[in-house]
Amino acid sequence: MKLYDVTLTMKPGMPVWPGDIPVELERMSKIEEGANSNVSRLQISVHTGTHVDAPRHFLPEGKTIETLDLDALVGPALVFEIPEDQDLITADLLISLKYPEKVTRVLFKTKNSKIWALGTQDFEPRYTSISTDGAELLVKRGAKLVGIDYLSVAPYKRTRPTHEILLKASVVALEGLDLTEVNPGIYQVYCLPLKLYQCDGAPARVILVEQ
Ligand SMILES: [Zn+2]
Image 1: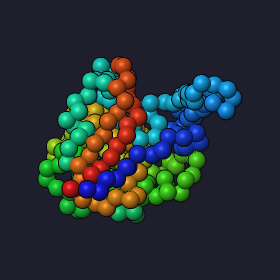
Image 2 (image 1 turned 180 degrees about the vertical axis):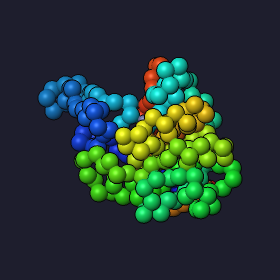
Image 3 (image 1 turned 90 degrees about the vertical axis):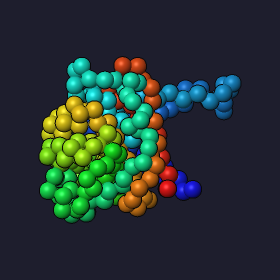
Image 4 (image 1 turned 60 degrees about the vertical axis):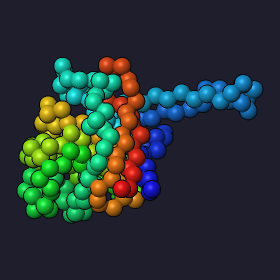
């Protein structure tokens, strides 16, 4: 059994969405300073690193993260590769790439994964994302989980429409994956967001298991 950890390591200095607070992770008590144990504190936006969007992120009455159906988050998933010269995942592109007729869980591997490999601290606004008609096609073909390898499923400066289409259709958006090590194909995905009370999103540990 081969296991892939497709989660970003959460650390100070990692790129975050413009306007979000930077990651603060620091030890509050230190054994070397005489404390009984090491204890750290973490301050983040819940949309930091590898994370799940709950419908509440864009829909005022939408479900919150702790109420999401885990069925969508665990099960067979297709890692689908988008050629590196493509910036927008449109319906036409998906059709031309022979996106299957029925896919419950899809994770898009795009040129974005290379951004993580660079280790840059700056936000990259020219990431590959999903258009509105692309999102509609994914919903039509049965998506319950849609993942992507940068910080938003939607284009920068136009985040609402793509999110709304997915979240209104009860599709879970999984953002900030690192798929550098993963080849296209079918895996078993385990995506487990923190169970945060009435929250619009949560960081998640995500692993893929080769079938
Ligand atoms: Zn998010």
